[in-house]
Image 1: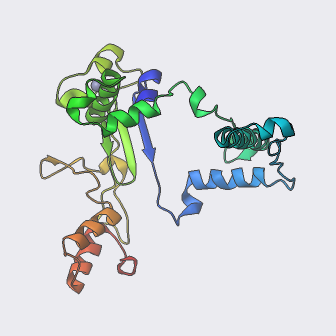
Image 2: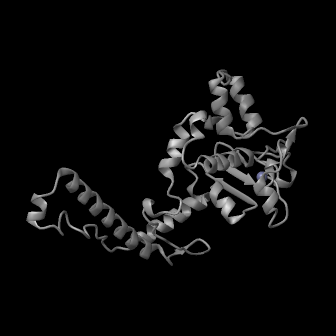
Image 3: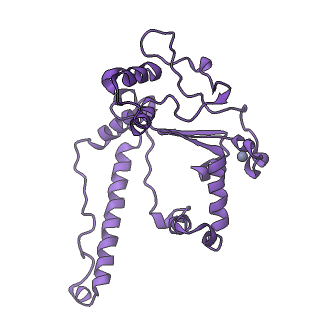
Length: 257
Ligand SMILES: [Zn+2]
């Protein structure tokens, strides 16, 4: 995500995950349902494009080591998997979806990807801080990780990037050399209960405070599921009046707790 932002020079980027159980309101799940419809078109899906050892003669087979046989089987499965993906791509590409038609692609194998640095990233992440400095790609990985630390806000169900959010320390090299593409923006205010309205409502986004008692709001400060979990861990939801107080504050029906 950080790499995509730096390459595309995005001003704002958010990845939001909605809770399960609300499919009809969830665009991602609705799209997945359309993908399912496109794939299940009634036609069979061929899997065995390449048969086990089908391209090898008996002599060749007899002379192969166990390792070579395993490699051959691995390559066969990989070949078949990509052929199946091509078939699925053909079915999904151009199929109807909410608001238009879908575009589908088959990715290239990991070892042919442009960002083929998974092994190096893993080595870097598992090394001590001291050892990291001598690992391949250390400067680049360090630059990406510090970009994430200074520009991203993470909640239980979202991760949000806004350009220039590094200014709490000092403007980083990326922001100072790229600047805003569109109008400057800020993070989206997170839902805040509307205690004046009847029923369970949040305030309009334009009336949602970003500060409470003069302090920036904490991440997920009114996210009921996150707060409920924290309250349980701290033993603050044991009594009936605790539950009642929680429901009033976080706008939750008691039955849902
Ligand atoms: Zn920055």
